[in-house]
Image 1 (cartoon, rainbow, N blue to C red):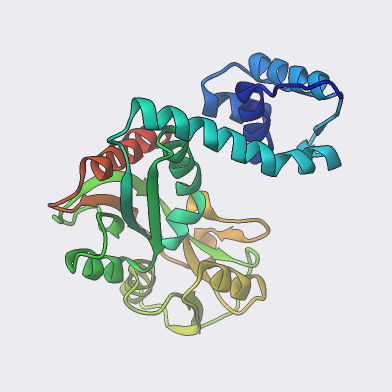
Image 2 (cartoon, rainbow, N blue to C red):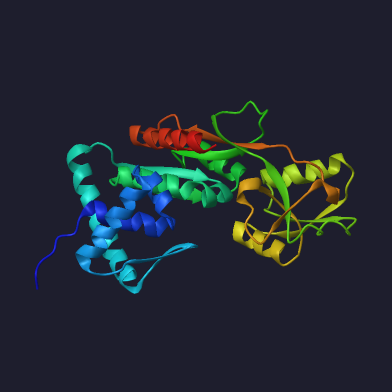
Length: 287
């Protein structure tokens, strides 16, 4: 059998297309045009004489051969990046401990951290999801190097604002609050910023409410809402299908925005500060 060498850039393009599900998003992530990404994948497929991705109107998906290549491709790209980093960035290493609210971590953070990890493969990230007040308590006890926390826009608290979130009421369908005198709420346990925001807003207009379902996980809360057990509060960009945003016609009050702030520890390492700057700069481009 003739030996064939795999091209790292082509493997990286293949992995990024598979992970993002889009040639366009893969190009944005790698800083390449869509045509360049497409050409790199075509060259890889021609080199191997295999079709690795099926393309259709709904996006792309891995073929059987694509699935076979994924694991090895990840290892090869990681080893390449690690070797380069050990030679060119020997001091950018170590463990960085990050605390973050679960909903923000679920939607906004994975790609941000993936980009940082790709750029600095010698850095080990330890990410913990929890409620904001719990994150703050543990941060001040030294458990984290930096945290992302929810706060009121007018609050004079520590940290730098990196994201502003419009909050909305979310239910199984638009009519969920029409025929109820007492609003059934699906919430995280106290202390929770969104829980307090919801109950304070309802109290302000004199609308009765009750906690119908309490869950410590975002997935658990959304499952309860899908089952019709109550109404919850989410950032507008994080409302998943098939859940619906409930408009003001249902008699629910408008919810003011909340913010996400980033706080760095006083003894944070240079590597930790680099992660903080990366988060800030990436969110500035998307918010």
